[in-house]
Amino acid sequence: MSAAQLQLGMSSAATITAIALQSGSAGNCIYIETETTALLIDAGISATLLRERLAEHGRDPSRISAILISHDHGDHVRHVGVVQRKLKVPVYITEGSLGAARRRFALGAMGDIQCFRPGAQLRVGSLTIETVPTPHDGTQGVAFVVGHRGRRLGVLTDLGHCFDGLGEVIGGLNGVFLESNYDPAMLREGGYPAHLKRRIQGPRGHLSNLEAAELIARHAGAGLRWACLSHLSGQNNDPTLALRTHRSILGNEIPLHVAPRDCSAQPLKV
Image 1 (cartoon, rainbow, N blue to C red):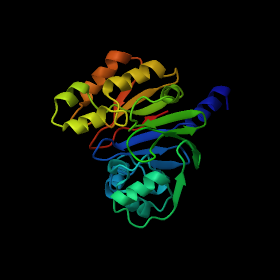
Image 2 (image 1 turned 30 degrees about the vertical axis):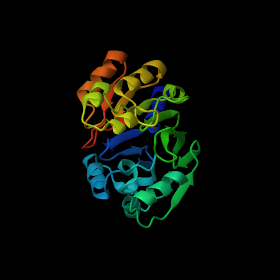
Image 3 (image 1 turned 180 degrees about the vertical axis):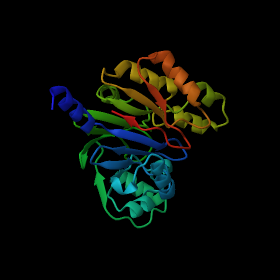
Image 4 (image 1 turned 135 degrees about the vertical axis):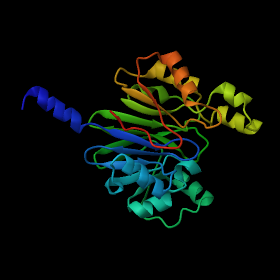
């Protein structure tokens, strides 16, 4: 085998593939795999929908080794009990998120629960997972950075605001699912009550299109291959508008995608 062929084989083996199965307030779930390991980040869609959307991409749920939960809001955790019982895999979640989720939702009996502290590093098969504490208004919530043989994929949603250290996280990524939740004008002029508008724009809410775009513009490293705009509001945002805002800041240098609210996206690789 030539040096070029050897390098190509190593590159292929190092690939992380990610599929956003759904993203937004109606439910969030991202499937991530390498050649040896697969996991889910969040379980905001039903086990039936999970199986159907994986099948659309030729993926078998039996490959999944673990479920990681970012925080206790229903669009991320509501279906974790049923999904775990179907898959028979461990669930990784902070103790605070688990307690809050159990109080709010009928999760039912759950088996292998691995509680971790925000900021801890986890290991699932060939994957290392860094957990990043967030100021979002969940209980002990985190974002995730999934690593494999030098590749780094961020799942950064429900962030609250652009907190200290977030730029450094962005700078080390090869791909990122980044929340781009709302357009300020649409939120301001929309029908949400005033307290909900304040919550979304506040320090424990969500990032706007402009905030997300500026975060990438200021901090993305040379290794960033793509960004997938995620957790778009159905009432206060629009995919075309989100992309236009990002393009106005970023130009065309970074490939951009949008994670759909009601279906799965095409696989993305780093």
